[in-house]
Length: 272
Image (tube, rainbow, N blue to C red; front, side, top):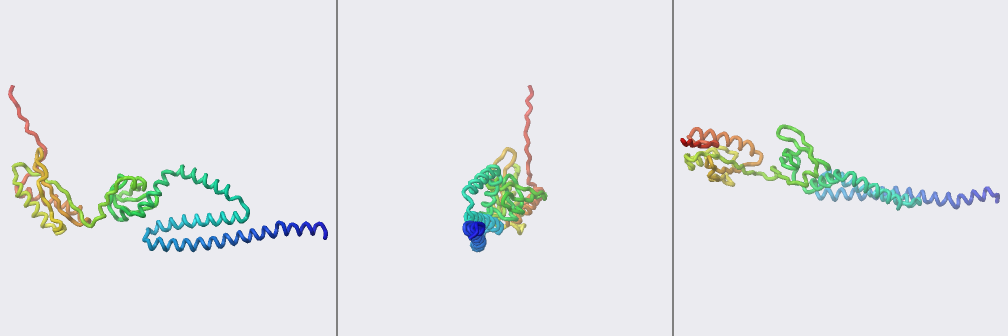
């Protein structure tokens, strides 16, 4: 057999055929691996939807899961081709650590966003006091929450600032109690003032009979006798009832001779 033909046969036997087998195996691993990853992803989505997780969280977790599965498939493919994947993993790990340190604040907001979506201390449309801001929640994303204030300003609050602080959800319950204080003069009749306030409460059909409204003497202050007034209303009626009751009680007091005193001092002059 000529030398050239012998060399060609050795090349085919030693290099071409083994590399062809490796390459075909690598392609098969990649194709089958992607197919298996999609099946796992489909099953994971069904499980998460049955758990009634937020759709945005499902989408995000699905993307991360698919990326991780695809990375495993790629590493298995490279391993089949004879590539040293240990060095690649070490490089990716070092790069991930550096990126994590650089984006520490963003990752904290992301983690808080995931917790807010999972545990749902508030929902879109709720009026909350969170992260030092009061407003109606318009959107909850993985990194921040968008609120709308009463004067129609849009405020974007980082999720880390919300989750690390106190959250007050005014819309979490169907009913709320209105806490009000009315001051009357020391010379005024307490029972008369109480009856006038109760009459105004009974006139407003938005005020609930159960729990029963409460009126009590709260304090003998420096300039007035303060009465605590605590009616219950549906949460949606809170501000309207509060405003109307303040106006109606003031009008009733004026019409019936009940004074609402203001801070004052008596000055006594002594003749030297």
